[in-house]
Amino acid sequence: MLKEKLLSHLNSVEEYEQTPVPKSQWKGWGSFIGMYIGEHTAGTEFVIGPLFVAHGVGAADLIFGLLVGDFLAVLSWAFICAPIATKFRLTLYYLLEKICGIKLTAVYNFVNAIMFCFLAGSMIAVSATAVGIPFHLGMPSLNQWLPNSIEWVVIVFLVGIVTTLVAMFGYNQVSKFANIAAPWMILVFIAAAVAVLPKLGVTSFSNFWEIAKTKIWTGKALPGQSQFTFWHVLFFAWFVNMAMHIGMADLSILRYAKKWYHGFSPASGMYVGHYIAWIASGILYAVFLQTTHNITQFSPGPIAFGAAGIAGAVCVIMAGWTTANPTIYRAGLALQAIKPKWKTWKVTMIVGLITSVAAIFPALVMKLLEFVALYGLLLMPMGAIIMMDVYILPKLKMKSNFAEYFNKSLNFAAMITWILTLALCLFINLYFGMEIFFLGLPGWFIACVIYIISSLILQKLTVQKKVENEVEFIS
Image (cartoon, rainbow, N blue to C red; front, side, top):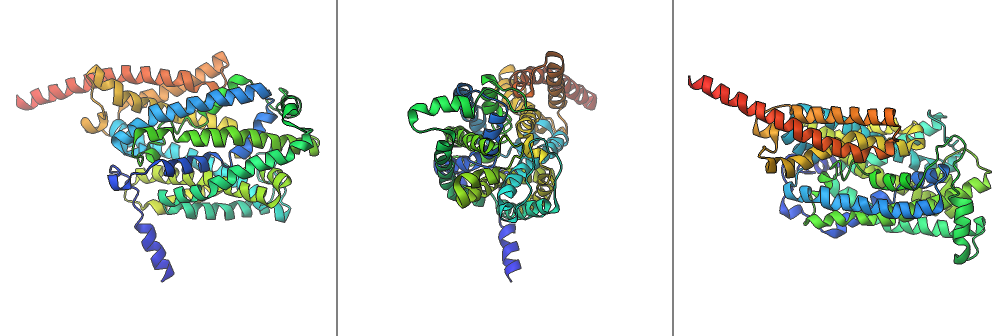
């Protein structure tokens, strides 16, 4: 009986995968503010903050780089993603199907889902470092790629099961989970960081800055780590969620918003989550390095436990879940868009399994900065395509939604744009030495130009062929 009720509830979950979200389901500020705080005060923060310390970011570079970078990210959500989300109220995947055609969208959805799985997997791994504390689990090191024990694999899978179950019940449950967890988590972040400051020698507010420059963000990278600057921090803060805002993945989330200006709600996640939490977790890691004499072991769970006890460990577990939950949800939507007849909850369950397998590899955590930069770069061209298709093509007397309008399964202009943009970004990286953290900005403009030019050529040829076929049919 319980199984039947559960299946009935799961089958009743309606996520409007191929229809606009009805007005009765639109949501206000509260739903999005809570979700974004929960998602961005999360497991990634226990990794990214310490990695900035490991990469030798200076104190001033961190403070001001985050301030500007987070601001640019909020503007990207508010003025690029949200207006399109509330105009059409469609998932990213269904809108892409109208523009790019079902064939290219299927490839994109698969790539997108896999990248989401890897991101969620890294967060499950972060939670596992806390779950493993009572079992004296051996933690991975900064340079470790493979799992180091069967205990690690088992704990990762257990965390993955719980995370997947929450995501299977749809957006409403994901949002509720984040709203419950978020306020408590940020308090633990702040309290833990303040509590350990005396261990670094901070005795008053007046000497904090001097300690910050000499013992936390020293400007000197740890052995084996590259050196980061102000520009690394700014562009990383801006582009860490490039796939979500500039890449338009959050069309699937913000389509529920009552107004476009609810696109400013990610500010809660950027400044409460990324800004405060990255600073706080960096402080915790600095204390960890001091007490362990710069050990290379990297374990968010024990780091938080050492600072805030059980509350810190539980915070790491919850933080991993609140990132993994919406990420698995998004991945489920991406795969479900390939096969619309599949039940969303079943697809999400499959995604959860893939995510849990990926999570057993510590490299996802240790190389998280590079991974999220690559992830955003891979998906960014599609965001540029949508932007140009909605706003620019009609002004140039071209048709939006090419695949739907001309009844095509493949938009060659979009395909060329995606492939050529990534190829040119790779060329810039290899030939000019531009690091992956910075490639998103020139890449976006490159994608815009390529899509406009290729669409102009393609639509002209398509219309010409259509006219020729009509003349031939009449004659």
